[in-house]
Length: 245
Ligand SMILES: N[C@@H](CCC(=O)N[C@@H](CS)C(=O)NCC(=O)O)C(=O)O
Image (cartoon, rainbow, N blue to C red; front, side, top):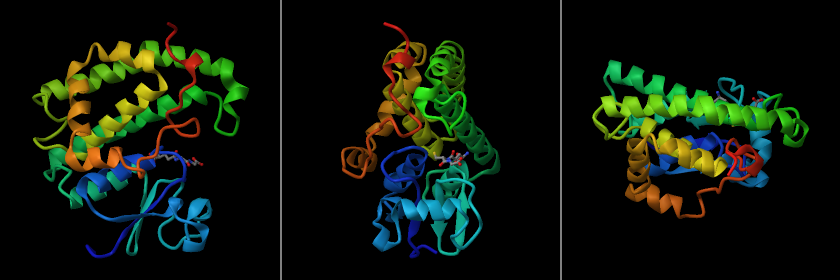
């Protein structure tokens, strides 16, 4: 299937969970079609993502984006897509134990991302942020005080136990790319909370810097293809949710 292009289905205009997929494709240097960012005339745009959610696309049904189409294969869930691509492009450990541990870490990162999302939408995604701002302030305070340090300590310990260079196995994997994206996102959303919590995890900061410096990734990160974070995505900057000065 090597010659069949990868097609990413994700909301246009925000990096969100689609970015975890893009980082693998960009780091691997493989071409892909970003359907959400195509025009409606090309069969893309928001219409294509709505069609995905409404089950109007051929292939196995996806509950939510991101989804990846590769020939006849249609898969969703960020962790599943990342593993599929990474195994095809040298960014995943192939032996069973490391493969399982990589998925374990990727799903723990997904848990963390969901908790970040829930700081600005603690009541529900069908309400605007402004309709749940009071609860969001309480949720964010709890997240920064209790949950983020626990996640960061966990990932820092995993990194240390694996020798300090990569989170799992002996080579950079999709999990390291996902950790990078999550740290950058949390740094965007909570600049003060991030600076404070990362004092306890210099190894993770160094990992973030090493991933950022990978040649294809650094070229991508400074290109127009890299979407900036904004207040429509998972990682949102609302100053009132950050740690007080
Ligand atoms: N567990 C899923 C979560 C997917 C998800 O929440 N997608 C968001 C965008 S980042 C969405 O559009 N959800 C629509 C919905 O849940 O109805 C994953 O990691 O891919």
